[in-house]
Length: 147
Image (cartoon, rainbow, N blue to C red; front, side, top):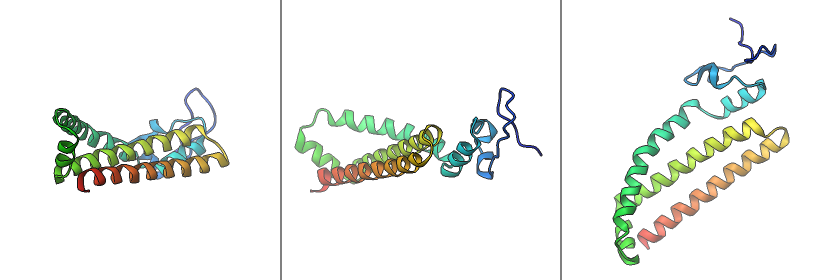
């Protein structure tokens, strides 16, 4: 079986790894740079972005419902409401799944548009930023709800 070529008639064959031929298929990796295809597919499980997107739909609905129920309360009422396990867990799940989805998207963008040594630094910065933001958000939810 021969490797497909880049659309537009270019003679550069795409070397698609096994992870690229999964759910996303060849269409996701039809890039002009075969290295970018391999790097992005090696770094990103094609199912992860779809799974986090699907998980964010009900989490967003539940989170908006929670926020609407908190609008009529004062500061102490919000603290007491977030002190219950369900709202605190819902808030943390929403934030953490959203941050992971953001990290996956930024990883894909970095793999497509940043080249050379800067790609490694950008990926490390992306991971550090998401980790720091996740720690800050979890700390804030725990601080508001349980202190």
